[in-house]
Image 1 (cartoon, rainbow over the protein chains, first blue to last red):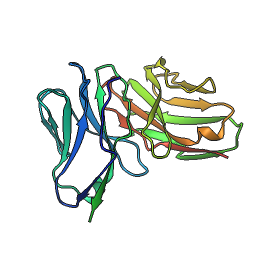
Image 2: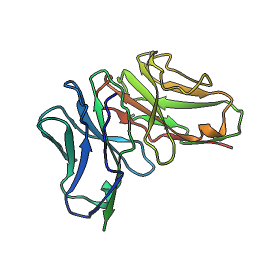
Image 3: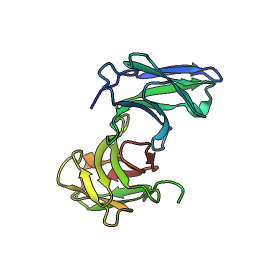
Length: 109
Length: 113
C-alpha cells in the first residue's frame, strides 16, 4: 500500500480556513486520494476524494498538486465541530482503506 | 436503517471468555469491513467481505479471531479466549463496492478484564 505523510497535529482558530497537508510521493497513477475524519468517540466519516483535479463538496475542498505527490484538504471556515483526526489515504479501485495516524486538528474558540 | 449499526456499543468481558460483535451494514452494500482501533491509533484493518465470502482476512491477528457474513448482510466478529490485549474499539464499515466511499458504524468498545 502506498504511504502518506501528515503532520501529527495542527491548530486553527474558529471561523478561519484550515489547510491540512498530505505528502504521498510514491503515489501510483491509479491511486485515488481519499480523506476521512474521525470525531471524538465516533467512527470515521468520509470527507472527500479525488484523482487529479481539485474537488469541492459541501464539507471541504481538495487541492491536488500537479505532480500528485501532495494534496491539501481545505476547510473553508472551521468550526469547533471540525475538531477531529483527519486521515489522508491512497486507494485504488478494489482496495481496502488503510489508515495511518492522521492529523489531529484542534480548533481554538 | 440509515447507517451502519453495531451492537453492543460497549462490552465488558472476562479474560478467556468468548465474545461476538455484530454489524448491520447499509442495505444493499456488498462490501463489509472490520477494523480495530486502539487508543491514539488509527483504525487497523482486520477483514473484508465481498458478499458472503471473506475476500481478505489478512489483518486478523491470530486464529482466535473469526468473522462470518452468512447471508451477505449482517456480519459477526467472533473472538475466542479473549485476552486483555484485545481491548479496543471494533469498527465496522460498509460500501457499495470495494474501493469506494465507506460508511462506518459507531463501533463496539470491548474491554477485557
